[in-house]
Image 1 (tube, helix red, strand yellow):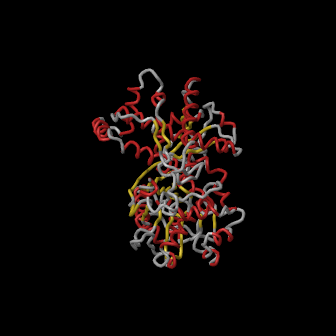
Image 2 (tube, one colour; image 1 turned 120 degrees about the vertical axis):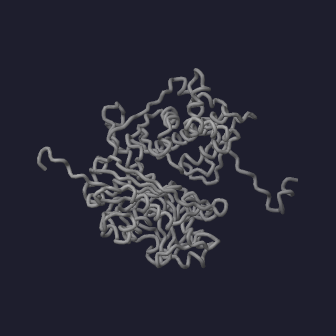
Image 3 (cartoon, one colour; image 1 turned 60 degrees about the horizontal axis):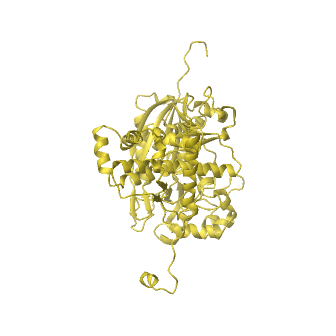
Length: 524
């Protein structure tokens, strides 16, 4: 290209399917996010621990947001499309039509969501096998992975679902199939949630041992026997039908997908930290830990604690009056009541174990419950603010717990790279810096998950070689270092010990002796 001639502009679309909404972004070749749109999606909870969605509803939302972000853009300059999504299980019949995953027989609800815990007895059975593939998932399979959910469907919905099923997709793979007609699966989903090995493939003995030998018999056609690396180009790109629905050109390159958190990692982990004096600047990328602060890790626990408090209506009213979110109001309220002491010291007598929905990492223990110790009879707004702070700190202690487990396994972490909704909350970010003692890097582009999805589309387009991909992620960053002095370090170390003690000193609920017919007999 001759000097002074502008570089041709190329665009990539990233689509992110979260728990409660679908979001899309238009990103250029430099990683700048140019347009954004979101659309809520339906959720059902027909009974406790059962959480369901609709693949048709989700795809319709994908089409709405994609059309919005490409409005006014020359379609010929749109080079690639990438999807990421939660690890939810999509069930279709042999003609790719939805099948019910519920006792009501509602075909529209054909997705078992990632947070669904219906398969508790099935995951216990799987873990009791101690099969070698469990080492791929930390030695213990989570109830949120796909094998126990598949076993639940076979044992509970044999006639209405299992026997009719032709395809079981992880949600990210469903989206790439819907766009291209290609049933190939992403290595990301299969390795993380399905026990697939990149080196060895499927392990026949595992599926036979847990009672799902059906997959072995049909050469894994229902769960994936063609596996591609994330970012690989799928088939001939967008089909005419999908192109019309999405508002994109036929044949637009579509990438093999990523899990949503992994897309966030891809979008943030390559941020350029030059000039900030961070130790990770001269270290390999493996010294960086991406922390995706989204629904699964953070929002549910914080919302549960805050919204269930007696002072929440007062909080809502005062936040509305100030045109603030409830969390922005709580942050400012904490600044008022802390007086001269560091804000973290307000929780000296209050500790939270935040696993209200079980622990995913590093314990993979679905039986764990949330706990709060140090409550008083007071239930005013000050108490709510301090309880909110203690919950934020508990999540940061959980991050420290994960880091220590990783370091014990041989990893060396020197900096945290945050993205996701709560990375916009300064209290949440500062507590992570103080409690882990590590610098926290925030990329200039806060929508790192969408940037990660767009990077997949850029890879599929062929415009970037894989080694160049991270150059289009956010190149400018801010960072926060720990504000803790020596006494604060001691305070957080002591608080972390209290956090660990809650887990280590827990005692399982006693079970009634088998000879007792009911709880009344047991109590007497």
